[in-house]
Length: 386
Length: 154
Image (cartoon, rainbow over all chains, first blue to last red; front, side):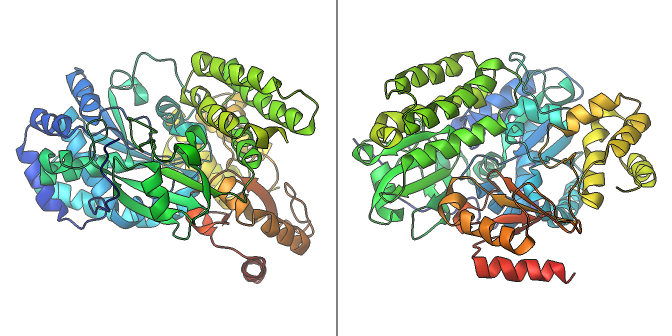
């Protein structure tokens, strides 16, 4: 299979003159901005990968005097920590991306929803926000950003749960449709974008869509920030061009004994060694919001799966039955099989349950529990049983 | 127990009395006292003119809006996979021995609570914990003893 290899990129953390970029952006009409972002092929960097340009286009098309741009900084996926780093190092680019998005969709208000675990960053972020507001005022553009804080709930990273939380309620996901572009925070048209997406969009406006489309593959344009952890000699944050195989990734970041890579966190996919060569990291293979966890042969994949299921059982909001009961039953089920209280064929029943959750759950949490479950159980069955 | 009336009024004055002020107000109380008493939640309900059940229902949804008594310093040890692989167990053991409490408990002098939490976003510097809002990373049993000693002297 043809692929791009492993290339390091410096787009997200590159220093830019915010005022210059914003002046350039504001000379463009909202529609021109959207066309640029559409042409770049940028897909959301939070994990779900919805085309950013389309999201902006749909929100722009809504006729409402009140619209919002929301920055999703509720980075809770196990193994993801790139948004913290982005906010820590270049928050002004996040604000800049929000201003450009606001111009595109016709919003005057922006909200950053920051997870409670990152509260220690807030004083610094507020200071940088003040500077940003000054720049915006100097340019003469009407746009204000404020912060809303999370309080330790993974589910609030789900867009509609996040809106509920901003509105002061339990973070329980809403039924869709209506989608946020029609009815988002305070039930107004809202574009909600991940931290990295907003920065990337700003860099697309700065450099032009072509520089971005030169990177990556047809399905996964550009570069992306990866959060790398687990059994690796070089854990940390790396910006890489999309389109590499898991093998190329492991050759660079593995410890020489990698038996599996969990791509996309607890809600992502487990790639075993035998599939490293022909699995591409990206939307044509295994998508990721950035979380890459490496496991070497000393690790028990039962422990990994058990840890993830325990995580989901705790973080399920409990609103819909497939997810609430499903997560608990999957956890109990693998424990039973491990203890020999259930036959190994019981795992097949559990896989069916995970598949049902994918269809029947209300939101992405319950729908994606089956990703890790199926890929770990299928590839490491003996480790789950014995 | 703490007296919450003044703080609740102070916070409602600051954040307003609409429904969207609820979480910032509760966060403000937790920031000061580390947990929500029944009295504080009733007080907030009165100020916002909503039922106390609404307040409790919202608070109990969020892990960091504790409705159980907590110490002055709440230690949350990350238990998600990387921290768990990289020595979270030793950290918990050291803390339990040092503070003479188990996970989920608070010291009798109400100084420390020991809890586990899900991924706090420091997997590349595991194991990691939060003490109130401050993260501490790449911990070893020796390091955590020093950190806790520092808090004991505060």
